[in-house]
Length: 68
Image (cartoon, rainbow, N blue to C red; front, side, top):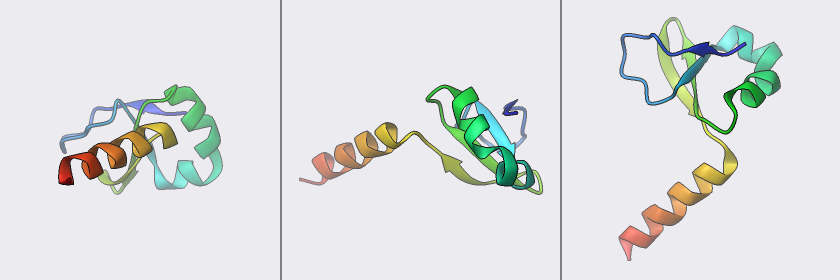
């Protein structure tokens, strides 16, 4: 259900999904993304990124490490 990123706006995720589709297909989209980020789109604009929990945790740990 995820689509390959073709948006004009800079998108850091290889996949994207619309809000309407995410309401019914989010679990399937996450599985199809295979541990890669997904851009959540609304009216052809990125509103959020969905990232695997392990990636988010690593990003937070790295930011905390850089602060100290």
